[in-house]
Length: 362
Image (cartoon, rainbow, N blue to C red; front, side, top):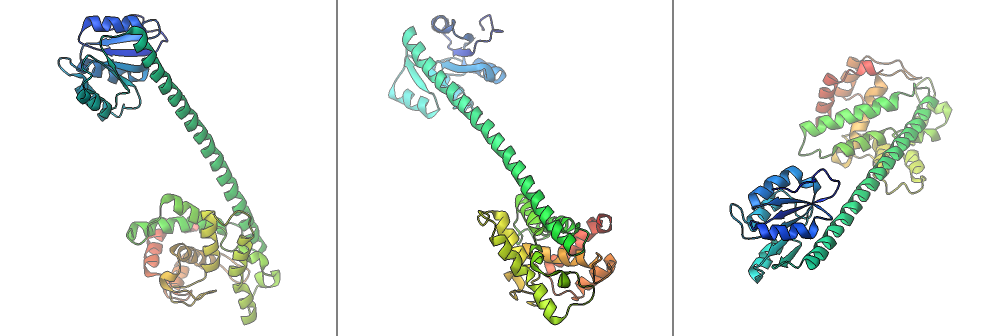
C-alpha cells in the first residue's frame, strides 16, 4: 500500500509492518514532513526499495512479519550494499538483547521499542536522517572538489609535458635536427614498453600510468646536449677521440641540469628522467657509457630509450650522415654494430616494427 501525494517534492519514508494500526501511527507521526510508503512485509518492502531507493530517506522496520521478516529483509539489504546509504530503524516490541545485537550487527541505526511514542520517535528518526543528509552533502562536496583537483592536476601535467617537449625540441633544433626526434622517441618508447610487458609479463611489471611517465621522461634524454658546444654538436664530420669524450658528457650534464630544478626530485617523472638521461647510452654487454653498466644493472626504461634512440638516429638525417633505410638500420642493430642490446628487448623491437609504420612517422 502507498500513500497519496507521491509526486510531492517531500522525501519519503518506507514503513514496513504487517500491523495496519502500527503503520497508521507511524504515518500520522511523519506524514507532515515526508511522503509515506507502506509495506506489509519484508518482501514487499524490498521490491519497493529496489525501485525507489534514491527517494527513500529512511526505513522504519518491524521484525515479526509474514513472507519475509525484518531480519531477512536486513540480510538482503546488506547484500545490496545499502547499509550506510539509507538508515534503518527497528520498530519492535521485542527489544531483547539477542534481537538488539542481531539488529545492530545487520546495520540498523537505532532500535525503538513499541508502543510508539510519536514525539520521541520523530526526534530520533529526524536526527539520524539529518546526519545522513549532512554526510551525503559532505561526500558530494568532497567528490566535487576531488574532481576539480584532478582536472587541475591534468592541466598542470599537460603544461609540464608541453614545456618539457618544447625545451627538448629546442635542444634538438640547436643540434641541426628536425625537432620531431623527441616525439618519435617518446612514441617508440611507449610501444616498446607495451610490447615488453606483453611478451615478458613476469619480468616487466609496469602499469599504463608508469609507461606514460617513462615515455614523457624519455623526451628529456638529451637535455645535457645544451652544455655541449656548437662546434662539436654540429660538426659535419666524424668526431675526434677528444671531441667524442666531450660529447659523452652530455649524459652527466643532463643529470646536473635536472638536479637544478627546484622541488622536482621527489617527482616520479624526475626519477625516470634522471636515470634515462644518464644511462640511455649504456649497453647490455657493458660497452656503453658513462658508468659501464651491463645487463640488468641498466633499468629497463633506460634500455628501451637506448634502442629507440639508436634506431631513430640511424633512420634520420644528421649533420654528419644521411638517413639509413629502416631495413639497414635494423640490420645494424641486430648485428651489434650499435652495441649489444637485451635479447628480450630485441624481440620486442622486432614485434613493434611489424605493428608500427615507422616510415610514416618521419
